[in-house]
Amino acid sequence: MLARTEAEQLVSTVPTGPYIAGRWVSGQSIDTFDVIDPVTERRLTSVAAAGAREVDEAVSHARSALDEGEWGRTDGSARALLLHRLADLVEARSEEFATLESLDIGKPGFEPRAIDLPQAIGAFRYFAGWADKLEGRSVPTSPYMGRPTHSYTVREPVGVVAAITPWNSPTMIGSWKIAPALAAGCAVVLKPPEDAPLTSLLLTSLIEEAGFPAGAFSVLPGLGAVTGQALIDHPGVDKISFTGSPETGYRVAVAAAKGFRRTTLELGGKSPQIVFGDADLDEASQGVAVGIFANQGEVCAAGSRILVARSVYDEFVERLVTRARDIKVGDPFDEDTTMGALINARQLERVSQYVAAGIDDGARLIAGGGRPDGKGFFVEPTLFADVDNTMTIARREIFGPVGAIIAFDSESEAVAMANDSDYALAATLWTSDVSRAHVVARRVRAGAVAINGWAPLDPRLPWGGSKLSGQGRELGWAGIEANTEEKTVTAVLSYAPDK
Image (cartoon, rainbow, N blue to C red; front, side):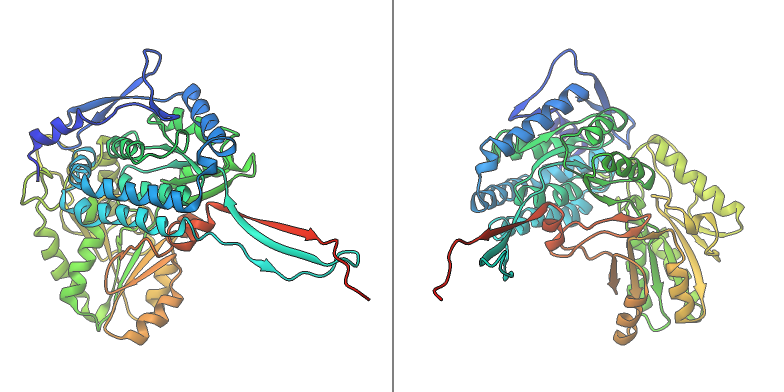
């Protein structure tokens, strides 16, 4: 692991501007924004921000690359080769990605090394495998006006895809959007998060190095209200893939609806973790803690509603408090740190307000609740017990290391509480009864249900939710379907059989 001073020097090697039509764009007319280290609160670097002109240029070049350029003529086997090459390049420089995510986001380096980078590399390789297998179907059809027909379908790229990624896991979630779109033959315009753009810019340099044709991929760093808005409003965009808050997702959906453009929206969650009385409490308490505190709780699938059988409630609460108190909050570049800083001052204020709301609503604060002295956007791992499912901390997505523990008396009550939410992204079940696990998994409303392990992601599995958690799916075959259109071709044959 690099030292902090070495990590900060690495930032100077990353491009800091838009990449359009195979070239890095700079100029005095382009505004800049600062990237802040959430641990030291110092400026890491300044990045050139794309405006409406750069958005229009990127979308126009993407369209040209598809309609008349080299990318539109690149077949599936060639696309697969490019994606495999990109995966190899990311793997070779995975330590740089992990280091930049620690700097940019504030998470300890072991997390991107164990989760984000393997998932990103795996996504590029998985979708490389699909690139030359996008087959159509032969469909038997009836004669037309007495003449025989031959009908079939072909699967074609949806077109220009605007990919807008969040700051909590930009490398991993970026790969979820980029890999299937490029495998399908779409042209991608990526708008990375302004709070954490560095790994997206490094990834872009590797896409360039891998040899993707000009216009196949562009990156447009900038502010959401300017760059992001111009991108979702652009009529040349055929699909918008967005991960972020429901409020912003609504604006994306409205913008897309104006042109009846396709969307994939992953908008967060308030995921339940149900601990049954027959669960292995040591294993469950460890897994539940990971589900609350991983990435400082800044995870869309964070299992922050912990529903616990009353028969084991007191014992489980005690175990979970011990887990929370064992967490070492600090600089991600300190080897003993197990939880880092929140992304910015706004997020720190947001989390602090929810902690205050939990206290005001009468929940029992049993761990954390404060923040360490000194610089950095740190908050302690926080747990509330004796929570009611109607309380604010049980209803709203906090996006911070705050868990709400709720007791239940029966399986049906647990399922009812799990489903009593405006979100439906993920859920985790902790039980030693395999039959119960599968029955409850069917009853819980969520896009993904994990049994005895929090959020076991895999590029082969579709990911997404419903209700305020969004619509559509990423990853798996669903990721290909989300980036392709099925075209029907029917030939009316002139052949006339002998009478």
